[in-house]
Length: 252
Image (cartoon, rainbow, N blue to C red; front, side, top):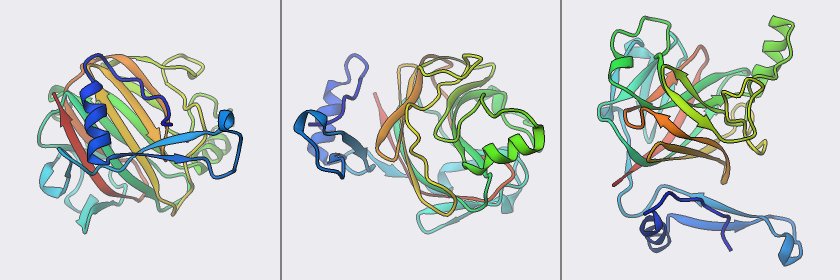
């Protein structure tokens, strides 16, 4: 039995393809339990028909330095300096994306931007992020402690387990649970691992709906995204991070 994957209309053919290609596998919870209590996971590994690896040749600079991103083997190392992004050379509308990532320093901050329009990626100032797109946040747990220590405020408006939210001029109707201001989709579960540990993200964007799976389980997302087509971006935000196995499957 697989966990429930809520697909948009017309997506049944992709689900069948995933089963045939072997890109969708189920893993039961580790602890034995009665059949009615077994928790299962859907883990998409990015293999099968239509999937391809993204390399440095697929990305273009926006406002980072040449040495900010170093591509090697099957991934990229980011220094975090300066703050900024790199973008795919192409735009996407409907897609699946998988990536592994790990922070190399406590309180690390990064993200994957989805559907950033060409307009918001023009002339982005140095040490700034695009003013548009849907951000799939990649945040280390130590960021909470750092924020509360430096600000003297409670860190209740963000989480470190996979927030999804619109940035700048972009719009999204977030799935619950919501942040206090209602702008972010907070994760249903706390599944992210700490520094120097690999995390796995599966992101699916279809017809303006974005969903995130963290380490094999769906946790957050939103619908009615505007725009619902654009570039994908990797974010540099002040701390070193490594991405590996970045793979994409573009959908009709």
